[in-house]
Image (cartoon, rainbow, N blue to C red; front, top):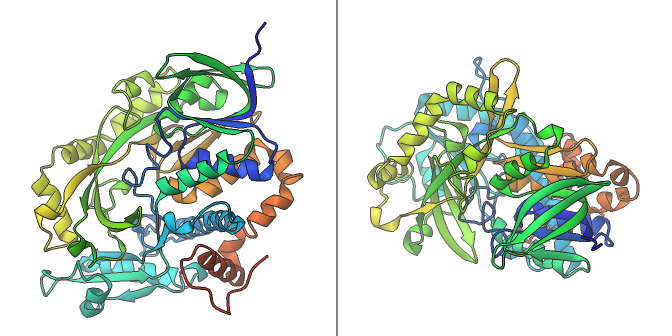
Length: 502
């Protein structure tokens, strides 16, 4: 009787999540045998592609939806602080790899870009002022600057101020040490680094067609999309990191924890400008507030993007609706994901989110002129000929059971793992890519608890001198690690003051 191939780990999807987890596992256990399988013919072809995502160094510095304001006017900064420290954990991992010398240049994937928040109107200004007052007291945000002075704003955002009404009420904050991250380049660098090690393979043009429990693990059926040939691989652990396709695969696993989850696909579009004469006047990521009644993922922003050494501007997002779970997916993805266990939550979400559905339809129906109108609220003198529409990647937002509402639509990411730790899936979207490392560390602690606390503990402490909770509360350590990472990743020049934290 022929035996199946056997590996320790199969990772489905060659995006930032799988690439990060695979490299982490290989660092923790160089003898581990793993295989990454990817449907497309290259890595980072879906959500991790730089033109498919907005996740470009989210650190809570400028994203106003991470700091909600309560009815009494106070601003809750917990989420912004948590995301900021998660991003610092990501930077620790990239710094560690860069220092190894075999990983390649960090300049190919991370660049210094200031992060700004910009608001209009009296309500917007009073919110931003309160946000600044609260955030700047925390050590992670102590370098934040605030202004209502238009001349200062003209220096910070020279593209955005000309052409505005003289009496317009505006304000802005700025943090100089923000970044732009090309997660496509980072993913492919991680995959290249991974495959230079023994017993680590990345196989493209492969579709996972089945997941079946076996003794102590899973049998993964894999089909070659070009030849049609199939093979079965036995794995002790399976990670479903396939973006929008993770939900159908999780359902196929049949694990108890998958019951009740549904997906709500949302597509996105951006306006893109490559005209160097325009691009040179905007060196920042500028986030504003979502329009009243718009969902949190619709927060408008004008971003400097650095892709393959070339700068462009992206403005958006403009949301849309499709039933595909992947950009290159099938229109049957949504209907095929309906199960007896999730139809209740999905119908409840459909009923309770009619406004969102109407919003998505209206976004799809927009003309180019209407899209330019939104852009001109940011950049009043924008010319149509400088901008073109770019279709972004798919986001599948999570639908979960809820005892009160029947079902809720959740914006964010969620790790779903089998009780025995043999399989895990990542569902959801933003701020995904920027906090990948923290999510994958959570997965390791959830699915490999004994190893994480014993034989891998010393290596984890070497790679990550400080995790999120400590960084949130220890100002001196945060500053030390932040300064070290910024030098290691060539975001600032080394000075005599910066020392190793090792």
